Amino acid sequence: MPYVLVFTEQYTRRVARFLKQRPQLRQQYLKTLQLLEANPFHPSLRLHPLRGKLEGLHSVSINLSYRITLELLIQDGQIIPVNVGDHDVVY
Image (cartoon, rainbow, N blue to C red; front, side, top):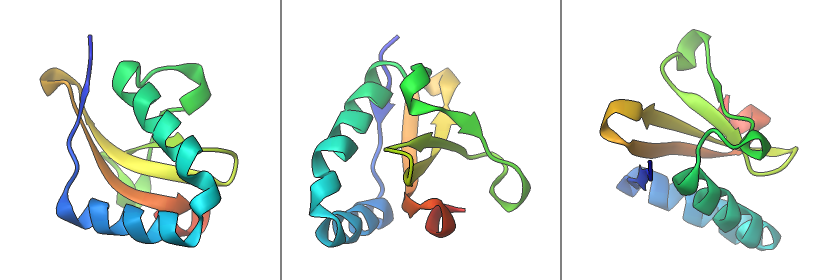
């Protein structure tokens, strides 16, 4: 089942700032989004649910240092990215 990424205005601003500060991660970030759309459960994404104050959100890895937090609405086939950054920023 293909999923659809739905970008909010707030997330778009966050990712623009993130990629401006880290242009070397652009390709990895785009590859992560492609894989997320094709199969959010792919092992290399390391998708996992979050707990505590971020309960209801999930996280995927861009690489070992950077993550994307997201809402995963399985019944609607939608994935809504919420935040992007290193561990301390997104958690």
